[in-house]
Image (cartoon, rainbow, N blue to C red; front, side, top):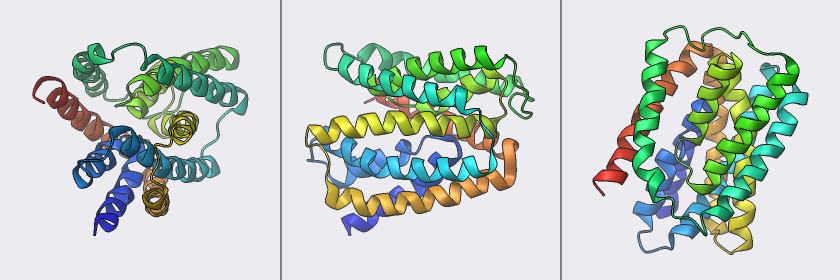
Length: 252
């Protein structure tokens, strides 16, 4: 029964994550509720062992339909991976508590800006040259990748928002690019968790199958309905993130 419950959660998480990120909102709480006595690091590692494969599936689906410049996004993936490793190291020496209380307000600002600019991310109009785009993508990848390794909640939403706001991408292209960078940060995190023995593979493998199935469905929905649909899901997910992070920071 436990395996069925977490696999269903992984299916739904994969679908949401493929569209706009935020699958951890579903899968991580499901793991903690189902296995309340397990070490947190093991549950987080097991989550990564499933989500990384769903992210890979979503990335593949997007890249079949959405054109991205590899000269921009290959080095940005490397920067995100390096940032993720650096952030994971930093959390061992710095308390991330200060981020816990500021995160709901940062996400609130992102949501308010998105709602106030009704046409934001509806059309794909890159704002900078290819060279500057590469520099911005690497910078965003490194900074948000470090945040992902250090703390984590809302990583996909931050990637998407910055690609829309800074690079002029629509939400569909931004989500595709975010999947590439999330793939790098998830792979870095999974490598660290695996090296430290914090993965339950007997759960991770069936959860990975469910997550891949969910990612396939979610990415197909995003590609079928376009940037406006992704924007709508983005607003819903960021709103949910604000509620969850505020509860964790101030009412836990």
